[in-house]
Length: 133
Length: 77
Image (tube, rainbow over all chains, first blue to last red; front, side, top):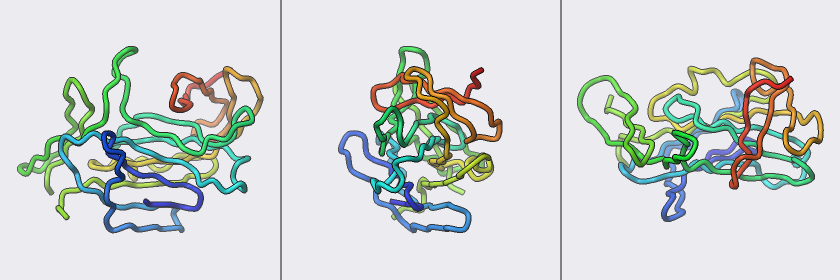
């Protein structure tokens, strides 16, 4: 799990609850950036789990976590202290495409030809796809 | 390990100012950017925050989901 100070995030298989295996973890404290790679498993539903560590030192602070997939903002969640409670963790499993329609995240089809990449969607899930460079 | 992977990026941008868009725009990227915010009052339905994005000013938060608090970047008066 890439982590910077008190911040952490992971990608979790929605159905099994398993955290995706992470490769090449890299943390750059100078620009406050951590990164790793996970395998794109086409069709697998996933959720983005993120939060703060539970150290009491940080419980008086408040943060907003923005989730961005393929450069597209998907959600923003509050973390930290609110109304006497502290929210340490939150997750985003999908997005509302209308007021009543919620679609889950899933890895999109993998295309191995061409040079340009694009996002695609299907009726039941939000899918990001990527072509091989 | 396949060479086709999703990159997971975690970014912390404390204080005013967004994480730069170029960093967040990569295709095949799942990014989480953290912004420090400040609670300005204790109202229960709408909490006011200051800072956290380049627009500054007050912002609102609405308790609209069961799993977490959705944070809205819309400005409130």
